[in-house]
Each structure stands twice: as structure tokens, then as C-alpha cells.
Length: 406
Image 1 (cartoon, rainbow, N blue to C red):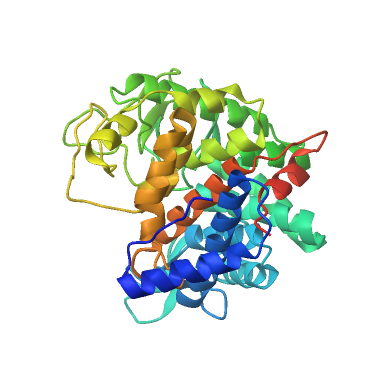
Image 2 (image 1 turned 135 degrees about the vertical axis):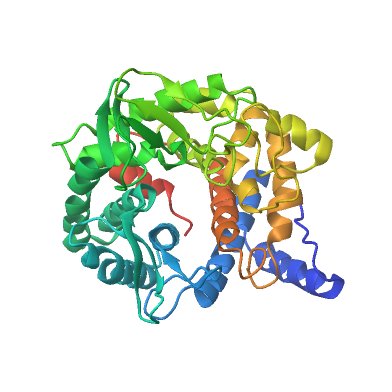
């Protein structure tokens, strides 16, 4: 099996690698792929324990130390990761905190996106508008939890969230039914759309438990917007934001050099992970494979620079070369894997694993975003190493089986 090395202090690095090798040496390894997957899973489990100790309070609040705030995104990431590792106690704590502090104060079944200390030194929701990615990730996590732990309360709560998502966070447009980024006001007949929120795998599960709404329409509009966005970009990279109108089915990029909304940036990097998961979950989805295999500038940039920029304009200019984020490496790994597995393994060895410190922490304590997306990147890599063989299973148990690191 290939040894994984970590660029930490010489003594700590040696001890860390020796300890990991000792543990893995006690396990029968039938193949090189299986060995790599076992190693990835061991790292994911250790990192999760470190994340819980650092970022999750005993009451279930997930803290982003950049501002000491909590977001619905953070709670949803924790719920998804807790399910993936079958950590029911943490799943319940993080969901309960989100429900009590982000959902109930709104008065409906969606979640306030931001919570923290107010100007008067009281604590509560700083912004009660919703963030759609978190609402749908929470709903999906509840359905997965129901599949695994059979508590009907999970199912009932999810079934209350789903109609709220449909009614408040989707809209009929000429291109079809489209996912909105939140319930904040839009401008007239134009809508800003965030492609990184599209989660086709979730809509397949939602359709299986909620027959009253046309969730497959969101699968189709998501892939249509993603595909056409790539075609309009000279880099063939997804943008952070696009604009749609009720007047026609056109998709518009923000092309002004001073407007960074259609950059490939902190938002858009997540597109590849979400599409990658849909491709693993639903192997017959040719649009996922085609999207991930579409040539873009990232592999070429990597071959020259051994790095990936976090901010690229639609016409190929690295807008902020000084900005660095480990999150990009984890999020884009499915694209590298589908285009060139050798490059994906190189990305893993040189950028993802070196960010993992002894004890399981990714990057620095303040880098909450990278903590999650490096973990998710390694998680989806473990799925590529051991892809499931689905037969005659409906969407919910199929996805629950796929997301299992135990």
C-alpha cells in the first residue's frame, strides 16, 4: 500500500505516520484500493472527533470563529457529517440547536441563516432570511437519519421542511422550476441564482418521500443551468452567481471586469462536489459525468503551478492570486478524479492530506470553511475508491448506504 506522508514537524510527523501505519497493519488488506479507502476512513473519523471538540459546543451549536457566529450552513454540514459517521448523539444535538435557535424564531419551517451576538450584547438571529443550501441539506440529513435510526420524528420534521422549500425557495421560470438561493427579495423580474446550491441527489430523495411536488424538475433545471453556464464561460468553470429572468430562458453571467459575481470562487467550488455525489448516487445520470469531464482550466493550471486559485473570472483571469483556501482542493476533487485520476491522487497527496495536522485538524482553527470542504473532499475520494453496487434500491436507502464511513 502507498504510504501517506504529512508535512508537519519531523518528530510529530514521524510519530503520526507510524501510529497510523501500525493501526492499518493489523487489518487484512485485500487490495491496494481497499487499503487506501481504509486509510481515508481512519483519517476522516479522527478529523471528525477533532472537529467536534473544536467547533461544536456541548449544546450542539457549531461555531465559525471568524466572527464567532453560527450559520445554518454550519449546522447542516455537521448533521451530514454526523450521519456519515453514524454519530447519532452529535446529529441530534446539532439538529436540536438549529431547530430551537434558527428555525423556531422564524415562525415557519425554514432556518435563519446567521446567529450570533447582537449590538446590544444579546444573542440570537442576526439575519432571519434563509439560505437554501442549508435548508435542503438539513431536510436531507433528517431523511437519512430516519432511514438509519427509524425515529419517525426525523421523517415528520423533514416532511414539514420540504413544502416550505418548494413554496418559498423555488420559482417557475421559462427554463423550468428553479431553486432560489434564499427567501430574500430579488430585483423585479430578474433573479440571482447560486449554482453551488443545486443538489440533484437530494431532489431524487425528496421525490421519493414527497409526491406532491415536482422535485425531478429541479434536477433538470439544475443540470441545464450548470451546463449552459459552463458553455458561456471562457474557462468552462461554474460561476458563483448567474442571473435568470422571467421574460425568457436565457442565463446571464455578470461579465463586467469590476463585478466578481460570476467568478469561479468560494461559492462555485462546491458545484463539483455536489455533482460528483449525484454521479456516484445515480450512475445512470450522464449529465453528471459529462459535467465533471468537461475540460476546464484547473487541471492545466495545476500542472504548471501545482496549485488551484480560489478566484477566477469568467474569462480566465486569476482575480486575487494572493488569496488561498484549502476548501477548493476538497471541493473540486471529483472534477480532477473524472478527468485524470493521476492528477486527483496528486491533489490528494500534495494539498488535501498535508492540510491535516496531527490530531485531525484541517488548516487553522479559524478556517471553518476549509475544515468542512477538505473533509468532504476526502470523504468523496473514499467513495470513489470503493463505489457501491446498487441493485433495485429506492433513493433513500441507496443514499444512506452510500454515505457510510463505518
